[in-house]
Image (cartoon, rainbow over all chains, first blue to last red):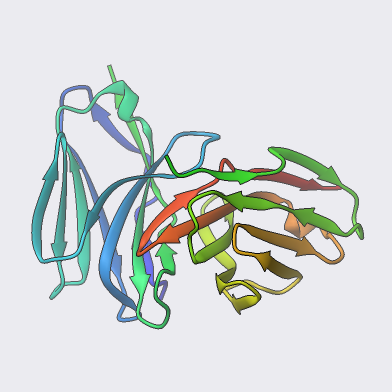
Length: 112
Length: 110
């Protein structure tokens, strides 16, 4: 089993709708989680971090963490064409501080 | 703003060549990383360094080595490039657990 797993997509979302992305993780992943956005041909950029159970909101983005079920999700409200990108879920590893394990990424396509 | 600079955006090399990928960060970060990114496989950690002259293998270190002689610079070395090392290579540095990426080097090995 991979440490961090995501559906590869593509996830097609109408403009203005909510995009929902999910990620599950293994026991080797520690309690810090991150969502990165990566546009085609560009490097990943951090959009959200979450460390505690529950929800964390930042603008149109909400990250949700459920440690008991070992999943983390990202909601994008009022999706815009500029949100079309690949979203990478990442978790810190328990064996080495500062090291991240990444999922393969979910491609999101927002259609006008 | 944190800046992580990779020396080349695109590189084309021949099989068997020794290849150097250079990365420099300007934020005095302790940790630096080299990842490769391939379609469907996501980002995979090759090596990381948590201090000058200190390094640890990541998940896929075979065929690679690294050098960190100065805190700001972390080099990835392909001792003898092979076609299966054709990939996008991303350098990163981190403060606490926030990771910043360079723009990436797309390496093609022919």
